[in-house]
Length: 294
Image (cartoon, rainbow, N blue to C red; front, top):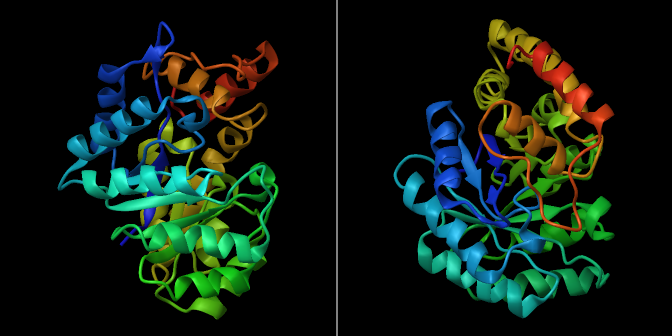
């Protein structure tokens, strides 16, 4: 259903407003370079500082441009359950192929609270749901046991795992079996995650290296082809400096700067995020050169 290189798409701004024409341009860049899926309105899309109207607009634009081409997994999470339900119902009705729903941040719910949060959303829609587990940002970590309970519900189909713990991938696979979709949220461990029975990556790096990311995913998922496994390793080494450089400062400021160098999008971000410092700019330029992207 969902696999390969799925881009966590940046949201371009012009004069502090959503730049719709640039957004469509970005989508077409991915359609032309082999990206396997699209996530509008996630962390990298600066969802916390988008208005509800803007958030709905980018979901609609993504669905329209990607229809019958690649799946759209709309970011519809919130730390307010009712807000997450409302946005999820909107994306469901709009025709999203999936929903990416982050664990509720700041509130610090218990594991039972997490279960009830996702169950409420699950019961309100008919679209497949990917759990987004990112303890570094949300402060809470969904246990394998809670995730297993949720997988019994009709719409919960997988996880975007941003724990950085490769052992977790193995635990999840053992607990939930082969039908559970496991996507990493960490570009730096994308290849190793697939070796641990992962099926792809919801990627920041793909915003500026779409073709390389999709090629690496295609190759890495061919488990029995020695030559393609070697090719995946080669691309992983090419991308490694870029994967590191894009997280020197808070995402998505670095990747937006990289996108500006490739003339894909301006580097404007919304407060409280700010543009990156000169040392980080130098590191990104060096990494882009290493990957032969500039």
